Length: 343
Length: 149
Image (cartoon, rainbow over all chains, first blue to last red; front, side, top):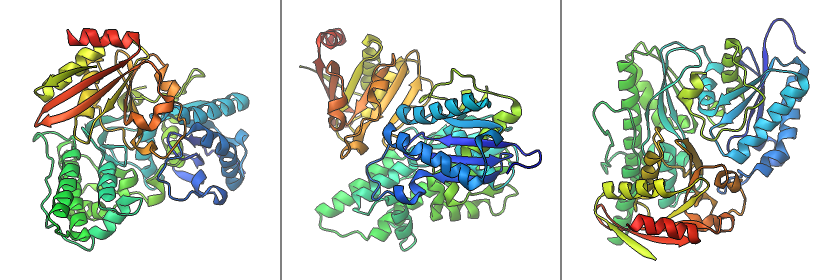
């Protein structure tokens, strides 16, 4: 039941393959956080072919919404606002969440708040601890690799991003070439702990002052090395390949994050997105920042992957600033993070 | 069916830029070529000509990345849809007034519009590429005629 002066946000996320609803108190406390794939009857297997069609979201959204309200023991009337991922993402998937949010907000006369998906991933960290500005976020997943500078709440500056593949995508492609089971990222991470960096794969530093990334060349180098070895009948140890590949990815991610943190004199560095689960990356970041006064925050795994709690956390900032999205809001697959931050 | 030989990466981007300016809202271009053939480079060339300011990078994982330029640009990579017959709302992209570029089009063949421009990019050596133009429909035949000038 609703008590005191707390503010509650009901948040919805349907930008890709997860249907998720959460209820967040004061932007930092999770009251409930339901992701469709976690519900017993919807457990998926394999997961290689993405379930991204809108009909999957349509089938699940009502169930997930009810479950989130039941777990919280709250009703929609007790909410102070409805937040939803407005973009970027797949338009058909986004539309399900956006239209659900609009219908709920209209029927219950609640403010409607559109949220940027990547802003959500960054704000997942605020469900654990308060932000210190200026703040640098390394967003690293299958679809994204970017460095985002925040000088205050709700404001974002993309200071670097991948020019080709995202780090998670490189993991996936290398794992597939190595014949590792899906999902390949965690498997490479596991094997890397058992081997050492002996193959000396390239590091893409790009221009000296650039915070951009490039993983396409590394991916090709690993695939070529595997093919050449196979042709010559040489058997490369999987552990060595995994460790050498991971060393290259991690070194570039960590070093660019470190340099950016120093250049912009940030007080906090946070990691967001699915690759934040990588143990090699976590250890290397902790090492690199161990002698610094900069606070390093790595969220728990359940908040690294797509969820609605992070959308509620980011939505709370807009709510506090009095930024409402009007009824004309539509799914915006090309929503720009910097433009979103300057609303 | 016409072919164009390109000597450098810059020439590839310039051809893409020239093509972008000949396209109309709701046009679909497919790109076929091996890993490293230059599909993303070609798409970057289209994006730059359309005034997209953001970095165009791989949509393999997200399947689609959309950008705002003078027109919207949708960059689709159907690679992960090989064993899927799902319609992820392709028409929403093809008919929203923008330009759509599709990589690995063979995996979503049933959803593609009949009238479109199919391009095949082959790596000859180093930065040299051979682009084959396969227009489908009269308006794309005209686009190709202009492109060859």
